[in-house]
Length: 597
Ligand code: SF4
Image (cartoon, rainbow, N blue to C red):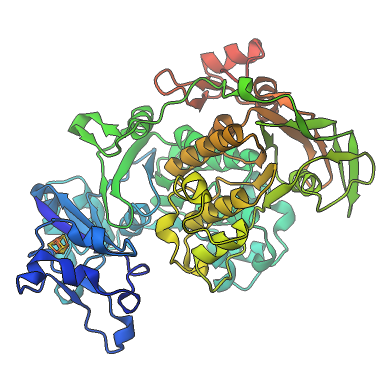
């Protein structure tokens, strides 16, 4: 076996501990130098360094570190041969690399921190793979190409090295575009319009009314679609899309997916990273699973059919190589959820209400929330979903109609505030109203959401996924009867989305509380909601919300508006979008069954 030791630089704080790792490492105790402190000029910045060649993998340091900053893993020796990149000593490393395919969309499926963005950067030529030789001994391109001799990826890397391949990349963090481009959306599109299709894509992606606005005035969804349009308007060989669904509603996600499919249909190669499982399934022709330990190492599987890859990912087991990468499988019941566990007691209800503001009108039919119920809210952006949430939360009032709410409400907004200098422990304690450590809420909420390890992290340094989980925990820690959450799936990876959906269901039923959840990830809604409120209308002008419908009726109505049908995967029971005009799609539409349970 080969040993890998990874230190989380954010968590390792030698000045706040007694250097337990160094004191207890058996090799250090025998006089060796297996763990030392890094040689920083500023000693306060020093962190632990582990010599992987000496380390015997006993794991004592992992248990002794008070901040859980150390990960020690034994990996098969042969894997070393397949190392593609390592960021430094005791840092993340990637094994294997996928190959783009002509005329196809290749999807990458894996957890946050498992190396998907590293893969895209290497494939795009933005990061030269170092084969694990970081620092001064980095290999030349010739050595890299020689290393991959006899593999399919060699030709791609050779083309990258010789600049024979042109690549367009839609970055993950679209808000950074506003920091580097100081003009209007139209000007940005014009700058990169190499195939004369910018106008076409702007229209397809509903950007026509945003074109004269400055990029820094656009919403997250507009920026996302603008970035997709910019990438699609380039005339290149390979298109890479890093999380193109974020911030978009389901209508916009579907249109983005169709645009991406069209690009591949023109004979181009496309690679995509996406956490919305329904969209990734809809989009991809082939898929690679990335597995390993987030933040420590990632292994890219061979390409598989989309359905096999998703089902094996959910199983946590790759059959062709007999590798189990998760000790439990995710299985889904056909969408019955726990409707029978909802209690009769109504905790909130409203009559037919109306609210007008700045040229927008929202009308919502009467609805109610019962104890033990999770009400899902679905619909396009700008139809008044957040306005309704604010009224349920008591932050806003209707012009007409009445809310009868006999409940305390805890609200998690869509856009999360991150500008805090203090740590996660303090933020969670504030939400809880007293110290979180050692409290009864710790095993109930913090531990199941796997947040204990994050106590010492500073809030402003959290990743998007970490921040979202902390915000969900903060919402649930407040003493309330209804937990109202706007887009809890945003920035979470597939595994966390499933975990959070199940946790919310369990928490609400187990504690006799209620939840109202707005989300655009249909798999998440399918898992978490008992009943649905469906929004229709004209975005930005008028929104109409149904009363609370059964999940089957609500989904049917919503999918009908989208003109898509869902079937259930036979093995995992997850919802899958039927191919437009396929036999099943036509049959389900004829029978009015847009949502199959
Ligand atoms: Fe030392 Fe054991 Fe930690 Fe390796 S795993 S660094 S041998 S304590």
